[in-house]
Length: 458
View 1 (cartoon, rainbow, N blue to C red):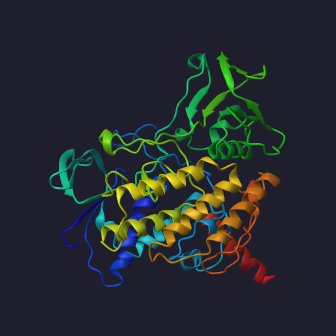
View 2: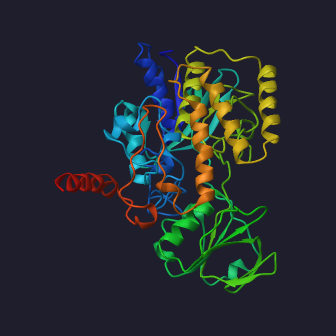
View 3: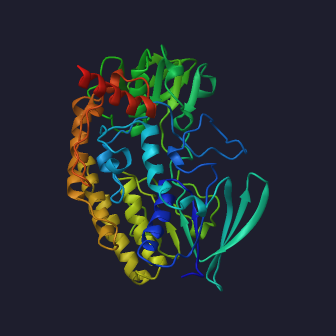
């Protein structure tokens, strides 16, 4: 394996998971192949690497991240905890179940900083094109070093696509939107709720991003929030000031017209209309073509491109599980690349894919979705030595989380859960989420310690 060269596109949670998987094997005494990770941003973290920029980055490349200020985890941290690196190990004390973005980013970095991962990553490096040579069975990857404006190539034995699928927006058109006098943006370019204070905003879409951006804007002082759904409403008992209407049909000036005949005036429109799986650096025959769902077609075990298993995709599913799912995938992918796992024939792989797709088509709601992805995780864990965790308990937490949100969309982040890795029960955050307007790591961690000290003195 020393002579094998492995390329990883992206140093977000999936790409970092792949590096960590190899290092975990190295800890057991195995020789490492040559690993090169290409990251077009100037730091790791992928979506969690917040930037104030929108549109393009400092070198003119389309901006990857859709992260915004005041984002807090919208699911319990206990559902995404790394099996080999707990929150307790990182923070040295219990923290709440719903940390803000800087705290989660700190946690992601904590595990990888313990390793030599940065040595494998080429930052400010953009993948332009990939060819696969049928004779040599190798990939030729054309790259741009953005910092020095240099184009070069690398020959690789395996290619791991870990570039994510929440960075290329779906931007629909509605008649008259071009004459709307206020702000029009996609959720990808949303950077915080501050600018929408005292404004009437319309969010088009019924995804988690519409739900979260709507609640964030409400929390930070929007005058009113309307969510417009295409098929089904989110269906939550919204507080006064947030409502749902059927899909917009058209705009006239600042007025939005809805399918049910309702009309209202707005100051801003935010398209929460999802993202495309976009891989412009891959030729047509290697490109994953799928909508956002729990099991993309053409990927054996949701990982290996069936026509060419040397091409590996990580994190391409719609997600309940996140960090720990990326880990489970990365460990399986690593074992294949290290000749520790033999895949069945292409025809047998196709049958396995079809079985998962058939079950996927029969899912009837969020609870079914959780069970489906939980079974998928169990399948992955059976194929590698990734440290096992109680998947059934995590699934139950997801279901409790879904109910918490239904009970009260404004207070569910104040709930606490128990880690399946350490058994630790999360701490209650020092401030109710609706009253906490500061998402900094310092405020989140230091303030809790300060209050404990005051309490002790009393």
